[in-house]
Amino acid sequence: MLIESPGPLPPTLHIPVHLIKEIKFAAAHQLDHHDGKCKNRHGHTYVLQVEISGPVQPVDGKPESGMVFDFGRLGRTLKRLHDLCLDHKDLGDFDPYPTAERLVLRIAYLLLLDLSPELADVGATLSSVKLFEEHTFPACSAEVRAPTLALLPAAFFPDTKLCRAADWARGRHDEPAILASLPEGGGEAAA
Image (tube, rainbow, N blue to C red; front, side):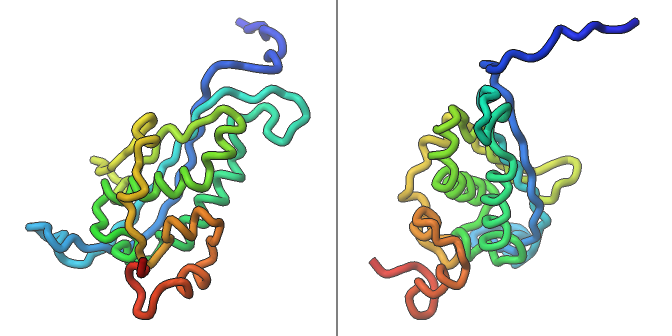
């Protein structure tokens, strides 16, 4: 039986669509206060899953026509995050106590700093950030979702050696500039 086409889609759809993009990275961490084997330095192959939700934009000749948000724009931010902050890094340099829960909050905060103005322009939101430790079954993950994302306080994120929030917000995403801005010996910046 043939199904007849209902015709072309209207130029604007006000139905939320969820975009999901994933990146994979390998990194090491240790949890000094843990009473099990995680107290020792060890590594994981992580999968970071980012979801953006919003209406499909009207087909009006603009670059975002027919999209919720440009996958390429999201991909550039995720690549920068991957290369400068996460992949083959000691995650203790990214967060002082790098549990999956704290890592996903810090990652979500950096994504919001970078993407919020453009998301607002198209009526989209960062709706979920999920971090899997070892993307296997059964999966172990930590996730933060909207509207909780809007509650992320800057004070929760002290400056660390990699991807300091202040540098990220100013658009200083090149690692040499970030590392050169650290006080002698690295660690937290002096006030």
